[in-house]
Image (tube, rainbow over all chains, first blue to last red; front, side, top):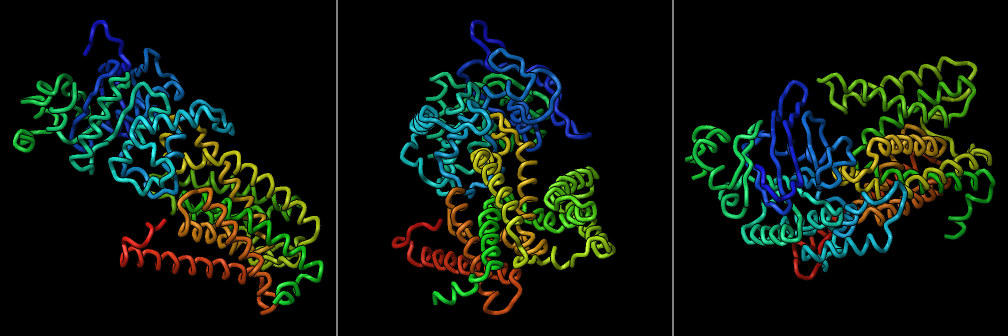
Length: 248
Length: 285
């Protein structure tokens, strides 16, 4: 979807990803503009995580990905995007503090063996303040709630100075009040120029709180405002027949 | 009591043994922290056994066993990667096959060689009381290098272990540091060779770190506690073996397990109190 006059942060052109003989994604093309809040929906196995990993430079792909107008040839070119994995993909009981997680976002500015200096520590502290967790910097990550954990990863993305943040199932397992609070934070971040792509299974939430919705099922089925991309045939093409009853 | 503690160390060979135990007590748990956190305990165990192949070849060729052990570590890593390419062979199966090949090969090479002239049990169970000054210097040098490597890569190892995807994204050389970690495990096994032997080097590699994990919530403090457990086990085990006339290697290994059981009991009591008196007890680590 082109937006004349606005600069695309992300351009995906004919993206394809295969795992062995299995095609996870094929011919996916879209653009995302600065400050957009985009939901990515689709059934399990639709390729949402694969799309996010490709944007983060974590899987081999065909086609073209541009971040900030720069064609991503090498992994280093993907550093403008911060990939936040599903919580189930991480060991959240790992012995690490909130501050240490966020400081890891600053690593892109260092060489091997180089230590974090006061500037990096200040940037990490600032990122934590922006997500409202400045007081919890010294706490073990495992002692935080699901919503707080997502905020920590958002702070890491801010410390990384990422223009684009891709969050895989960021709101799964987070209760209603904390979900709303995180969505408010998304809005604060986009107001400051951060662009967010969020994979979600909650179609009602996608309709209510997102600017735009990408419906995915191995290919891009629909792309547009939730009012159009989450209705009728597009929904059925994404989730299969019977989905209209299931999602209302 | 003081005499009981000092008594064994009146002779030079026991002082050499104590210095060697200290080196192992520091190095193996420092590397072991990453073995435990990355869930590589089986790989660590297999590498300690598989190293025998490299040690045997090095002895036959008349070169340093350290070089032999390091090469064995790399060869084992490559073998595992090669075997894993078979789609139906999982990583642990590949490790098991590679371990069998290198351990069995090492045993046969040593047992068939007249030239080596050493007892197989020296490698398998260690002979800490035969350590001389030259052994100490060599092991101190490689321990220093290994500790420096861990110190330099500490933050990156933590990031890779916690979130490999993020580590790749921010430019940390994930593959390169994986090779460094494999080399560090080999070095820790070599340094443990005289103290506890290849069969029980995993005791110094894994048990102190696993004990520390039960008690701590940060990698830095986990490393410090693991070193404390490692050094006290090595020194305590050596002293006990002198008084009880037991083999030093297995005695040291058993002391590490005693620490682990004590830490498990402390952790269990803490959790019980937290459940029974949720308001009066701080949250467990």
